[in-house]
Length: 381
Image (cartoon, rainbow, N blue to C red):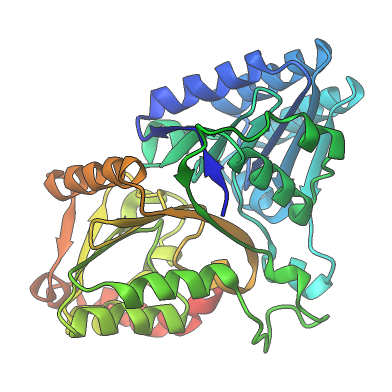
């Protein structure tokens, strides 16, 4: 059970971005950063420039991106931006930095979108940033995100886990992090799983392995007695989690799901279609569903206002059997209180679209038909 000495919630987008850049400027010996993808917009350029500056002043910089994530993110960039991104990464490598595009071992895993979705930034300062944000304007100017900054032994735990998503962690860097002390009294559970490491050549097809993150999330859901609040980019959980959420609502728990509206992704609505294919089961069980037009990309689970988990795990099939994911969980009131406030803000936000059974029935017939037909391919979306 890792612990922390300090804990700073980063819900405000500008605050998180400023914290990230300051964290890089303060590094003197090493800096590791993992993300699903980095877009070559203003944020991606500023991040790459900050990493290059750090490398040039003697910091050992390691950037871990997901190959599949970069392919997906590539549709948001022009050909010129993609070329510029490649040149900037090459520049960082020539300066002595390490840039890794994580790819699972199996061809089937790669073809079905296997990869890593973990977002960790840690340096020799002893501070670590952990949460849901990618390096893109979408994360810092559009969507809701939730990350935290912490110091203490939790930094060592998170840094060590980068070895399981393509990172090359120098043991001396682990040893260089500040030692434990009496101030490290914020207790967490850390849940991490990379399903690609336990699958055969067939990848996710027919895989029935154990995913620690999925099982722990289901355990949280099953423990709820009064309230259960969840955020996810698009709420399209793997079947076992979907059943657990519906069962919680049926036994009298007030279940609220906050995720993204159909219009939050300008390039496609297929992720929303996959989520909408579960609405009948959720609404019939009494789950309250809210869609945010600008996008809900945070990953929060709050049980009975006293137990919270946060990190990278989207409630979707891919998070269960294709993507490495990580979550931190805690019952400490100093960790729970900021998330309670976030859900209060989400509930009071007039932009939220409350998908009631009545609103669902009023959808156009053509939309219902698309959901019914394409929803059969939810696993792929």
